[in-house]
Length: 90
Length: 213
Image (cartoon, rainbow over all chains, first blue to last red; front, side, top):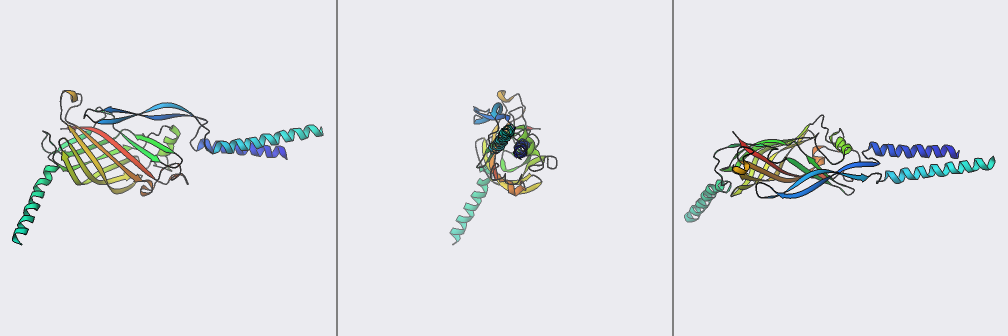
């Protein structure tokens, strides 16, 4: 029973992560950041020059991470309890 | 009473005469000039900002195309339009870019361009080589067209040795305005607008073009 529940928890955790990735996020997103520099144009006005520059951001930062980790944690605990009870009975 | 009527007529006449003069640029070009946006002067990129409680998203829209007709002697007669392809819009995250152009958001396949066409200049004031206009026009996004009025600043630079790399007088067109996503039936995924994506989008544009014959 505990083993089945653990598997369900792992499957749910994988589902949450899968949905999260499909929804537009990565574990390690290769984001670009808009770099703004002010310069004078040919009209003599100060203008903003905007360029996308590579910037690495670690993903897994929004609500999906705690949910997936929580489910995976429950799964791990259940697996451990199942393993311990099997060992005891053996 | 007669004197009052005369005074009013003089004031009205003076206002009518002065009107075009206020909308006149101090440049040599005569008559209506065709102005075409050109990336060779500077990259024409529109930037936009979605400010929402959970996330601020900055974006850019390159590959802006546009032509205008401008008579420096009468900036109240400006006409023209610009067009921006949805597919090239960038937010700094390729997956989000794909979502932006996807069916739930701007649906680039069905509505490939966002356009603004000037239909009337409500007011124009010029000083030296700059003019400030209130431009009324048709803004089309996601297949929906709404009439909006936006502030536009036009700067004129006459051709000289420094501008020789692109022929003709140079013209800079700047504007800043806000649109509401709901006005253009952009609903996105349920629960996202208002949380992760702002209900309104602030648009800033500084575009460069030149006169063509």
